[in-house]
Image 1 (tube, helix red, strand yellow):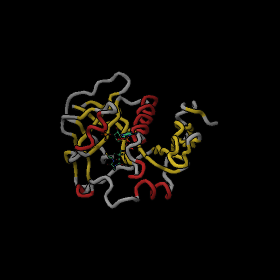
Image 2: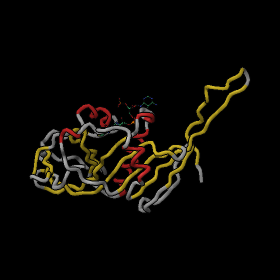
Image 3: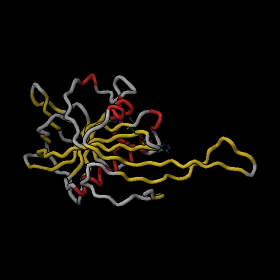
Image 4: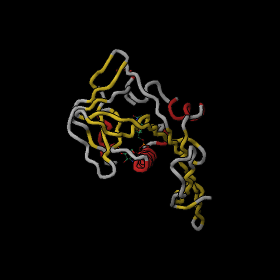
Length: 210
Ligand SMILES: CC(C)(COP(=O)(O)OP(=O)(O)OC[C@H]1O[C@@H](n2cnc3c(N)ncnc32)[C@H](O)[C@@H]1OP(=O)(O)O)[C@@H](O)C(=O)NCCC(=O)NCCS
């Protein structure tokens, strides 16, 4: 079923979720005559899966050598458990990966929803697609439930995530690497959920970063 300007009600717990909708009718600039206008309708849907297809991987991550600009850090990363891919007219245009984990903050356990591998290939950037998937991931975590979302990012990405309600963690965050624990060289941001407040104190990830 295709629903205009809205989402189809689905269960969060199915492995494959199709949320189809038609976006605004975009007026096609070409082919205009005085009394004639052409409109084009784009169909978008968010597909949830536990693994990406090779075609999706190529489309989403194959457009550059170092798309996350973090190769120089030589970090070991943790794979994501669930993937959200936004498809526009059946083409994969944006991705957010998520996982669930318990970190320790000042010695106490905090359940987090990890978010990573946030990407939109250049052709599709600046159309709100990654923001849409980030909001989708936050909704997913509200149902999960976890106390907060947690992600790693470059300093220059902070304003993007802040615009979506995420907060910078000011305390050191220790992450695991093959040689032992290190202080995260990337910024860490959290999105408190369900009325929780992110606690003060040093964060121990007890995991590779994601
Ligand atoms: C970061 C990244 C995922 C953003 O994806 P995106 O789909 O372009 O994100 P959005 O369109 O939701 O938002 C990006 C910007 O476009 C703006 N934007 C959204 N819709 C827009 C529109 N219709 N017209 C103009 N600007 C728009 C947003 O406000 C945002 O601005 P900001 O960067 O100043 O905050 C993408 O640039 C990317 O893949 N970069 C390389 C990989 C990477 O660095 N990932 C992040 C890892 S932490």
